[in-house]
Length: 344
Image 1 (tube, rainbow, N blue to C red):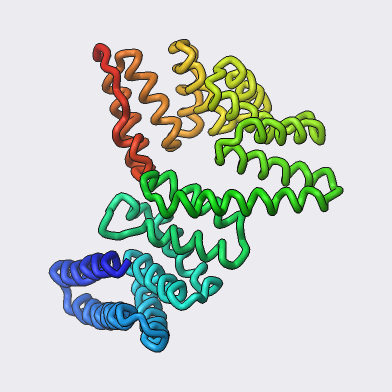
Image 2: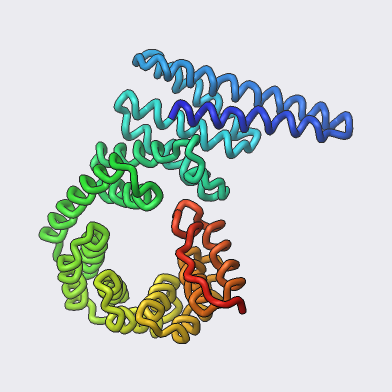
């Protein structure tokens, strides 16, 4: 994490120099000079905070927290969003290091939100060490008893960093705790609407944990509570997909689409047709879906696979590029398994 913060510093100082080189009028120079002074102050406090953090004593970490707060105020004034990702990650790490997990959650979460909203995709840059931000946030949720957010945080982290054993271990631990919590809540609940929500969450947790039979049981319980539940159909469709039961997967996802447009149902239905060898049907479904959800990374990825199988290499390349640029954290989107074929 400390190495990541040093990398962020280079971006800050470089950005200020470039802005000065582009000034043309005197009043702009004065305005920019004030901004650079403020920016330099933010960088100073951020760097000093990092130095204090490295000392790893309670008092030095408390001093680091004060410096990070002052740096954050400066970055906010200057709308330096790269700086805000870095300093919030630093601040959350400082709180995490002294066991103040509740206080760590907000800045760590904010660092990830800004990274996503601004399209920085820092997870694809190893020197930023964003896996630690996700790890510390997940642990902080877990330590404060928020098992649902811990589970969801580690699930995303595991998708982005599938080879990280520490994230995987915490993901498994959070899954067990979240599932146990949901079971307790279900046993104490009598309201059918709330039970439906709880069973859907439990089914999804079982699905993500690879417990397909248990996930299927939850789907059937949901249908008893609500025969028209889209959550049950989605769960059954995904279970069928994982079991490579393409016919049932198509059946369930088609039922979802009959009730209205649904991004997830479109790309999973298209993928089911593609995997079952019905290329034409896959193209029809996926092209219809992409018209409604043009920036869906998963939809573009699956449609790219379909185009590639149809020999439409240029169309496939375009879809893969959209999938990769939209969500480069998913490695397979940027390194698709192309099978060849003739160009369109």
